[in-house]
Picture (cartoon, rainbow, N blue to C red):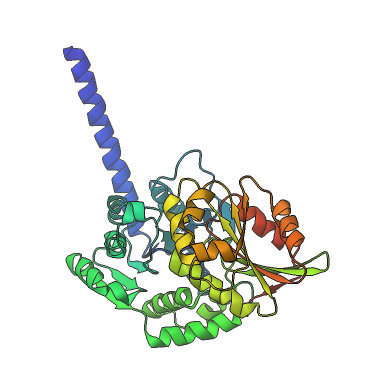
Length: 399
């Protein structure tokens, strides 16, 4: 028994030593990366990560970036992308590996999207793994309420867990500034807000972006950071305009299918009520020449809260003619639909559809051009529908 106990103690001692060595190496790598950007928030994290990285590259900064959005990607200093293929569930230890890779490139900067939801994991990710010089909170909305809730203030407090120590925190949503004033004060960090001049530049840049439709809020917080870092210049503007969008970025595809034009607005990645409503309204502004609007709602059985939230939001929309419910969880959505919506709108349920089946089903019920707005979740059939339209598109509507 004593020999077993001694062996266990020796193993523990060795593990502690190895852990200490790895921790020392990790901190040493971080210290050699002068600009460390941590992107957190409810929506827009991947887009903001890409915008910042592209602007940095345009300024000659060696930057490594990582997104964890629609399709997790590592963006190398030359702009090439590597897909992250996981064998199991996502783990925040990935962030340590990104720092190690950045050290191999002698990176001047890293831009990393936060991948944690639980408050304690957000704290660990920031205080132990990234130690950001600058943290950006893109926005604070109702999503993942079962983890970050139950209320919107709880979401704000959860996101505040990623406030850096002795750094700068830029807040994209002033509604919750009291919460962040406390977290930044506790951690000796400077709290900054988007200014009017950032919004002015963002508005100008939005009009010039041709590859996709970028949200003003994402551009404004990106420009605020660039301004704070001293990169408020034409190179940064050019870099932003050259940004390759995330697969989940908002975009409108147009295809002509058997004599009818179908416009697909990709809002699948905007799955909280506020973001979804904005996507719906913006889609109608962009495509005004149609008489019929079809809503495609991609549901996940394990996200019952999201299904209920979306149904409650859609109850308030006046212009929807048909709703296609995809995947499992349609019963939860329908249960939350109002009597008025159920009587007014034709609802079709597809538990295991293909993109071509969805397109054929749409054609079977329309005689004219129509706008299709995709919401809910982008994974699975959501990505297939996007690819279906992308591969057949006649052009992009971006402005």
